[in-house]
Length: 95
Image (cartoon, rainbow, N blue to C red; front, side, top):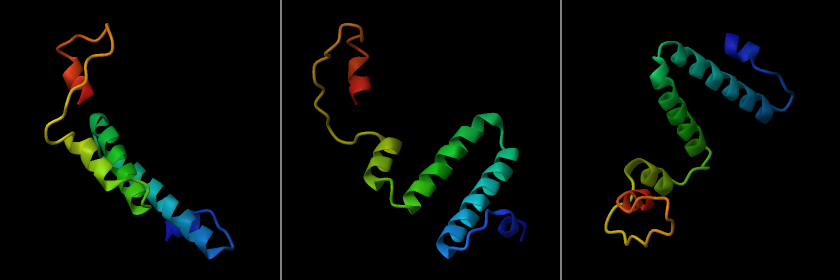
């Protein structure tokens, strides 16, 4: 009840629902972060952000999978275009 009363009001129902959703998301984030160790807060923030973007269809599922798992299959490594990256580091950077 406090969240509904505390969220910014608006005569438009769509905007009001968006305000309530944003307020509850902020409350969720603050309350969960209170119980996390500092080193875990960034990971929680990333996962919460990903879920928000996914629910809005603003993140490509294939790109998200690539971010999590990296490339799969054989990748043809192009020659190192720089002189400042070590030859043995370039394949990992390119992948």
